[in-house]
Image 1 (cartoon, rainbow, N blue to C red):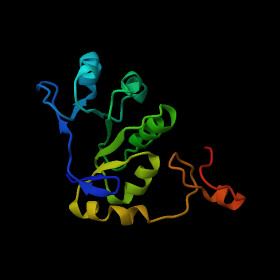
Image 2: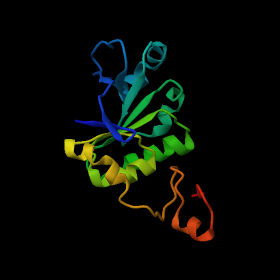
Image 3: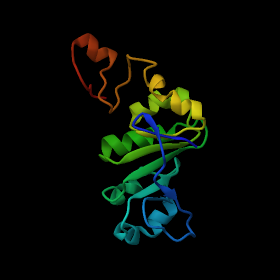
Image 4: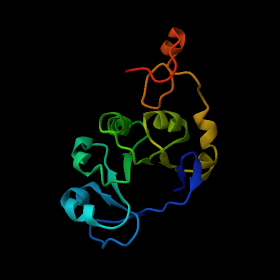
Length: 168
């Protein structure tokens, strides 16, 4: 699957490692189960650390690991299952996660804008054409009714003459 980071297609520097595999040197993505079971040893490893977090787990479980995590990949198992949007907003807005939030699974072009507004900054897309059209997908709409953590003003704040982020 092509990876889009900060708006442009890019190679995927992270290696996904199964629970029974030895961790290689370099940047890795481990499962939630492995992170929770081997957390202390994973914190000590030299190299970027990421986790593949399922959308049916509470992101509060990640809180003790957030300072060490460079990447959290949130899963969209089906296009109509939006729990990862809420997880992304919680990680950015409540927990202050500054690392990469990657959308993985059933990531479709028509969801890019909402995913970006929810806090995602990397996307594993299903089609090469979607990766090429990423920037255009983000320009689909320029006015928003819902406030999010991306700092774009809402219609309400624009009408009131407020610039920048509006509170939820």
